[in-house]
Image 1 (tube, rainbow, N blue to C red):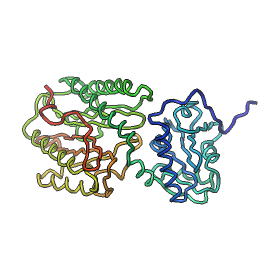
Image 2: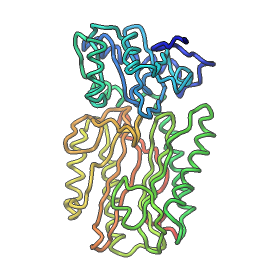
Image 3: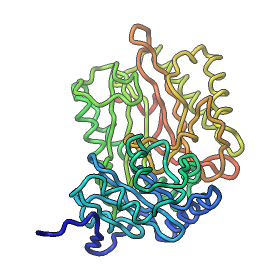
Image 4: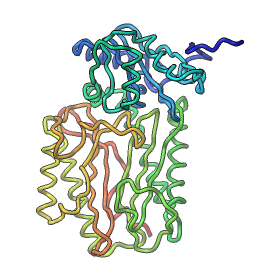
Length: 402
């Protein structure tokens, strides 16, 4: 009878060209090991897409299977399922172990092979489920477990020059998606038809600009009429009508890195009340961008924008925070929650952080000017202010599409 191992190494082919140099990953791992030393963690066990990709370059596709990265003082090893064969090793900075599904929980046995038993284990409390945490404890029998999710989030919030270069290139591609969407807008066209035009344009440009990348997850949300009332409303088959308010949202994804372009638009014309709300939101957007500079807190920025809107009797139409971080994140696995422009976040902005400004006002359907108004730019915090890396224009002069 053929022996069925719990795990094995399947280093098939040659290492792929990762989105960053090996030195970038080593710098990140050194920062992580500094966190581990300060907290007494002997082995860090990561289970989230964003953390595994950040430290190794490997972005997994779970499909119901657990994936991991174990980092000790000397080793860093991704743990992947047999269904992926050699691809995780090719796309990992460092070693890889493949676990088999011949018996339940071989994943945790592979983790234990690297992390060892009776160690102090760091884990992601904002990702690991109760069920998997119980398996961690029963298999690894740790002396202690420490939630390091906030500390590693803080590490990711500070972008390296290489990350900012990638984000800058991706912002340019988001603009390309925006222009393709604008060119496709026609009365009678469906939201899905226009969204596909923007997505296709971005994917083609990503393939040109990043010839060695893996291509996945780029998308467009293009909303019209009442569908604009929510920032994350999905694309539908609704056909565009003259006078519709439109919401353009293009999202290129490059090696797990997310960028975005979001704009308010109108088809044919915008009535006077719609123009008033739109221009007020643009003024809010510009005021908000002027506030993003080193030394201020996310909460301070938020409260100042709140005052700006309240003076114009519009604050009641605000539906969420005014911006968020960029980096290894997406709609699948969230973002760096401590770098969001909300009242309850007091993170101090620092050079090297990347953040959006994206005020949104939603006017209910039974009121004049009904719809959702949102502008969104990406800003890099610099030593003395910020740099806006979004190029697509905002406002009525460019975005009323005839």
